[in-house]
Amino acid sequence: VLALVITTVAVAYSPLFAVERIVVEGAVRLDPAALETALGDELGRPLPRVDESEIKAALVKFPMVESYQVEARPPHELFVRIVERTPIGVIEGPAGYSLVDAAGVVLDTTPGPPAGIPVLNIAGGTDSPAFESAGLVMRALPDSIRAQVTGVTATRDDVTLTLGGSNATVVWGGVEGSAQKALVLETAMQRVPPSAVVSYDVSSPDAIVIR
Image (cartoon, rainbow, N blue to C red; front, side, top):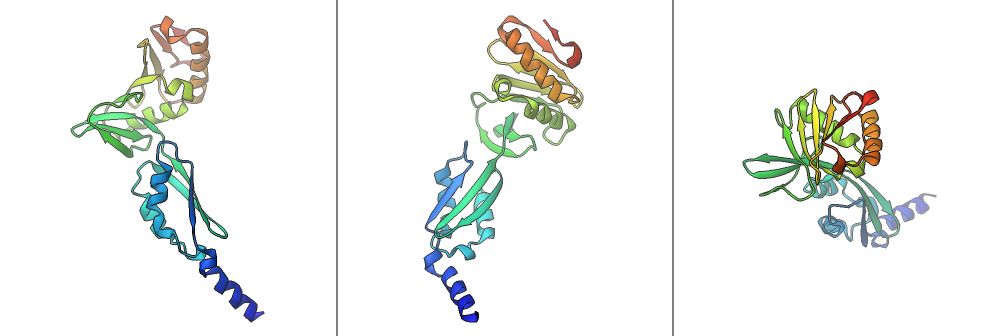
């Protein structure tokens, strides 16, 4: 039995179970090839000796990565599943326009506003209750509506969205009942498209007002 255990351990830590292939899943905005290259130091290492601290150090260089899971798949595959952060908009600052997620993590900075990303006008910056409210509202929106938002103005208790193309606004109010407000707004926009209105007021979702 002891010989069998020793043999099994020796084989597991031998080149017979070395990493020959790194597979990254979950990358949408990130380039999977770039992630695989960053993890390249694990190639040739026996699967039981894969260094998770090195993997963490490699992935932390990509701000877009929110979390990840590592799975060894014998005999030669290292599988890494990542979850990307969801950008909610850009904030203008001295360095340009910073792309941020709902936690206020800066994902990228560009000289000008990137196309298709809403500009955030937040009282107090990313550490403020207003930013938290804006993040909660943006995350509550269905993808179909979030893609139309070009601007967000927020205080702690009042969030207003601007929709591209028509420049119609959405008066959201506070974050309470955001799930219901999102559903009501989606239904209203299907019945009366933004091109035909000035504003949707869902601050009281039981009595939506369309102007």
